[in-house]
Amino acid sequence: MHTTASDGTLTPTEVIELAVAEGVQVIGIADHDTVGGVAEALAAGARLGVEVVPAVELSIQNRIEKDFVELHLLGYGIDYTNPDFVAVLDRVVQARIEQKIAQIKVLQRDGIDVPVEEVFALARGVPGRPHIAQVVLARNPGRFPNKAALFREYLAEGGKAYVPRRFSLRLAEAVDLVVQAGGVPVLAHPGAYPGVSDPAAMVRRARDEAGIRGLEVAYPYDKNRPHYGASPQQVAALISQFADLADSLGLLKTGGSDFHGAGKNIALGEQGLTLEEFACFKSQWPNPKPQSGSVF
Ligand code: AMP
Ligand code: ZN
Image (cartoon, rainbow, N blue to C red; front, side):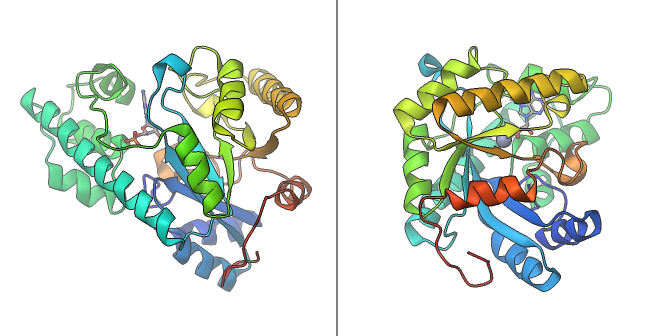
């Protein structure tokens, strides 16, 4: 799940309160490139009886020749206080901030009204392209028919305001970082990378060349690009295809909602694991470390 620490719209405490209301018993807090929401979520979880898995969703440097385009790596069960881990995340976030400012400048040069301060105020935590999009769409009515058109013309890979980051992690570096922080590296939503030409081959390469240990098999593909609007049968087919792939490659299987609050039309807990599946996943973690406030 994402919180206001990145591009979610609910605070970590609000996410946990919603989990209680919805009967969700275990939650992974996996914000983009930050663990800024984890401590608050752990405290709220301890208070309200929800098991919180400290996590992160790392954005990976694009390697087009390897089909590693816009990949996201989940790190579950990390020691989010590990100083080396936190130091690398700080560098990633700094580069992300510079990238967002550069992207906003391109939009401004094209006459689009999008003040940097407004984007950063909206972001509260780590800024992302969805924050830029929200401000652009609100301040420039009629300029873009919808968010997808804005991404296509400006923000998506290949768009006019797509700017690479000065520093970002390669997949193998991100995997090592997660493992060193005591976590399990899991490749997120393998079927939701519009820029990846062959997801199955990409996953195999991610295991062989970078050492991922798990695959996010269950995912609300119908609520995300490039399968937006897919039927329940199509979603089930994708999930079963990736479950088979994970089994054939010896990867742990996980599931996630990618919940963003109001940022996406996804329910909390959608496509999550059953408690049995979670127990199975957790029993195979390499070296979960005990942390105050968590159950590990
Ligand atoms: P960033 O973290 O700044 O790279 O932004 C990544 C987020 O932007 C993703 O998690 C998506 O939610 C969103 N995003 C990326 N590409 C698109 C797109 N073409 N249309 C809509 N949202 C997108
Ligand atoms: Zn993701």
